[in-house]
Image (cartoon, rainbow over all chains, first blue to last red; front, side, top):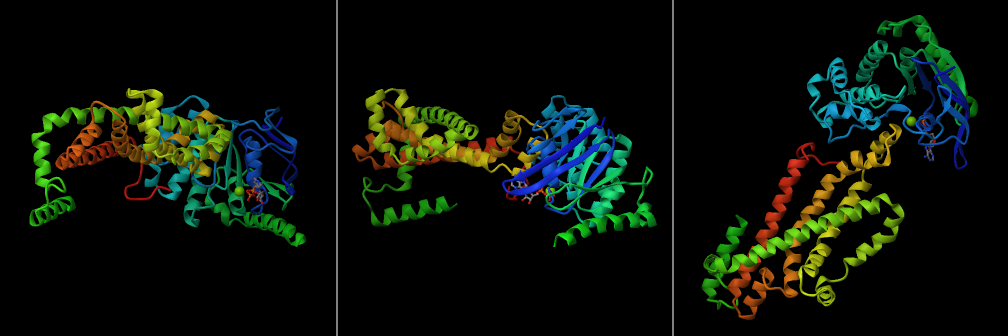
Length: 249
Length: 243
Ligand SMILES: Nc1ncnc2c1ncn2[C@@H]1O[C@H](COP(=O)(O)OP(=O)(O)O)[C@@H](O)[C@H]1O
Ligand SMILES: [Mg+2]
């Protein structure tokens, strides 16, 4: 049985049909990316899984139980770091746990140390750079006790170099901690570099256009970015996205 | 510094024009009276401090309670917010005698007057703070599965503290004014009483002593709130606007 199952989900806002018959699933400890043009309803998918919205029809299942409209089953990292300015970095990374009950201060300190943020435990968010804030936001999500981590375009606001550093960093953390990750992006390279599987969405009303199982072995390093096959996959996804858009025009 | 300069100019003008004391006493005379008449004045001062503090505390608690309930129950907010604003359009001077008729000369009407003056800035400031809580932070909390109580205490309340403190600062200074007005209603003691007696016997120097005392008290309360704020809120980047 799949860990998280999104089954035949549709969602409209008024007359605006966003998702139509969306179907996909994730296994435990899998890293899956969802890629699609902006405005295609990617964040809406997260809002549905997070229980902020309820699907018009279809269902969302975690380990076989329906979680339609129920909150608290995922841990979340938004596009902006969304750190609380009055909390220190340590207090910030503990927030996700705090909401669910128990706090593991030692584990939090350990994670901050791994992330190279040990010196900033007592600092406030405004003292950190953009990339550091995103690391903090990711650790907050990683420490939260929920089984699935949802990341919504977490690096899209960063500059190119920082973003690449962050991708490598995320990959190394994930490879040593193995959590179930659902990762939204509109960056093809990012999706291929990080994921086990890439789900490509069609344009609105969106559903799954293709699913690609990424063939590169782990642990991965940046050399695969220059690999022939990597380029080929990138081109494939690109054309499937663009091709769809062209047909609509 | 500016104050000192003002006093010097004032002193010179009064001396040169030789204005009579009942019209405008020189600052030196006022300070002299404040000094000599201290034992006479200080029970009044104390009494005013007492009721302003008490009234301010009641006003702050009620102001916050009103803000929180209006915020959490949105239909209350829509129904009562206009009423709140209207309540501020009733002049306290008009309301005061009514309160005496209803509640007599005791402590209660005085506290009501101060509360009426104090609660409004706090309520408005707190409501503004709650409402301006950034949507992205709320979205994070909701996605992370926070309850409504957690959303309030972990996000909206701490976010609003700076705003609430601005309200508290305004109210703290108003509270002294409110206390003096409430003493005019009829009281045995207080700066308000002292002032009425002084002006009816043309002791203008004493009126000024009272005015200076009120100004000083307001300033003192203000500074106390600022100190409390600095103690409580240490996360704000210095000299940078919070958004
Ligand atoms: N709460 C909402 N109410 C109405 N329309 C919405 C709402 N949320 C999203 N939309 C619309 O849904 C579409 C998809 O939004 P979104 O899921 O944020 O796309 P993406 O994350 O893929 O860029 C957008 O056109 C947006 O206007
Ligand atoms: Mg989005």
